[in-house]
Length: 239
Image (cartoon, rainbow, N blue to C red):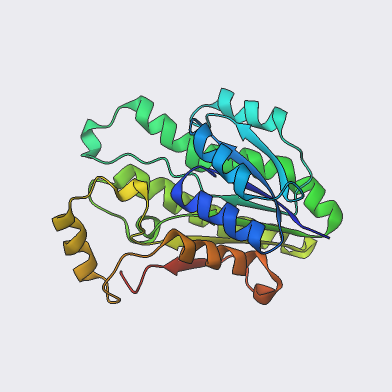
């Protein structure tokens, strides 16, 4: 039987890679996105009809948008991957309350509320997998990324706490904390800035979205059956 996985933030670089890789490895997938409908349409063409559950448009940067998704989506899932990539960069004192609220909703409240909705069915089945795509900044912190670092750090704490709570019900909860990854999120970096960052990475390069997707699939699968509450860093040794 194909397992059903909901991917939050499926139109982002990592979300797309996760959708493709999970479909290739036998999962049925449901995809949440905000505004990039063209990317979702392209993914639908790539994924077989048997493995395509559907797409859910919702802006998770507000409570109203989160409820829009909760009302539209099925509550029966075997796995969920939170891959939302919303970020804000700049001096913290220049950040507006509106920008703070958006980060909070996308990275914290959405994760809380969506998890709360799908957990009852997972507990009933005594089976479930939750993976959160955090960030190296949630572990190390970063200048000009203070608020983003804080919400990613909160995700890591949530993963560790929830993992302990639901492990007796057969549910595993983990996070992946990518380092520098070749996605549109880092497209603002100049060639000089990218080269400087890569010089600091022991492996000497940025990672790929596919490498992150492979790690996520490992955490969803039976190969990681004794792993829960962990923050797996996919960063080429960058710390």
